[in-house]
Length: 269
Ligand SMILES: NC(=O)C1=CN([C@@H]2O[C@H](COP(=O)(O)OP(=O)(O)OC[C@H]3O[C@@H](n4cnc5c(N)ncnc54)[C@H](OP(=O)(O)O)[C@@H]3O)[C@@H](O)[C@H]2O)C=CC1
Ligand SMILES: O=C(O)[C@@H]1CCC=N1
Image 1: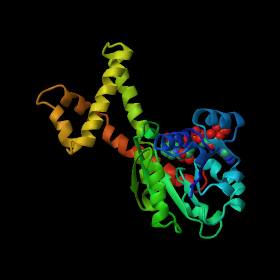
Image 2: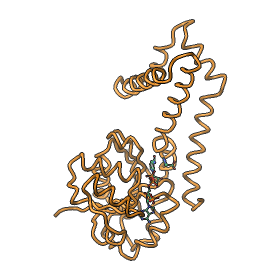
Image 3: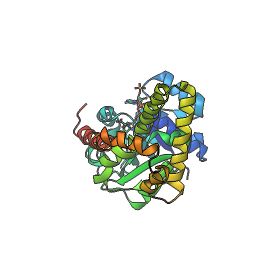
Image 4: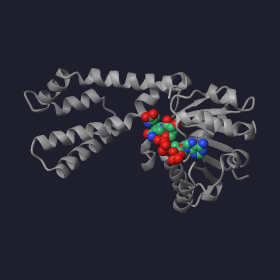
């Protein structure tokens, strides 16, 4: 039997997932999307050949519902959906902060819920998606969520108690690297390089470092030490990073992101 999957609230993350599923072989005819604005629904249909439906139609028709609205919009969406979702449907939330209990309390009794935190590299099939089961989700439900999110990158199962931390690390993670590239490119300007050349040098260095981190099997400390020559250039840069508390700043930044994810759970807008 064909399994229909609906993405509800198809914005940046919803569309990244949808396009990856199609690249991985899902038939567009089995994919339903919902959007708040008609022009957005039309755009998705034109780009991907998927079928725009209302949230209620999605609830009635799809076997799996993937909710990718902002955390602040989740309550409104659930108010609309809840009366129409049969209890045998799998509901997957892609929202930061919102616990599976939030969905379980509003949906029919024993509805299986899975919580996933992915990230924007889903657009290039290099996502990191962290997956947790709610109270009624079985191994088969988790496997189905892994199959869907596996279309856009790696998946990892974690206890739900670790989701807020994972959101801080990998959900928001790409933003920190983009921020670093931005800052390092500015440094290139200060050192007299044209912006486009500075950008290319930093981006290729980031890609090279990322591939080494993934493929070499070496600890990042060892990889950094290999760059850091005695009385050389790198150690002078590292001393400045330490002087400016960059390591402490990163730890504090990720702690703040974790805390914000926790606060979203209690409906803080
Ligand atoms: N951006 C990221 O890097 C990541 C985001 N996330 C999570 O993914 C979710 C989506 O984020 P993102 O894609 O960035 O946000 P977007 O704003 O791009 O996408 C959300 C979409 O939902 C639509 N929407 C809102 N309410 C409804 C509704 N009732 N019915 C139908 N559509 C609706 C919005 O419409 P409209 O366009 O009109 O606003 C918008 O298009 C969030 O919960 C976020 O926490 C997770 C990992 C990473
Ligand atoms: O900033 C946010 O809230 C979302 C969740 C993780 C990445 N972006």
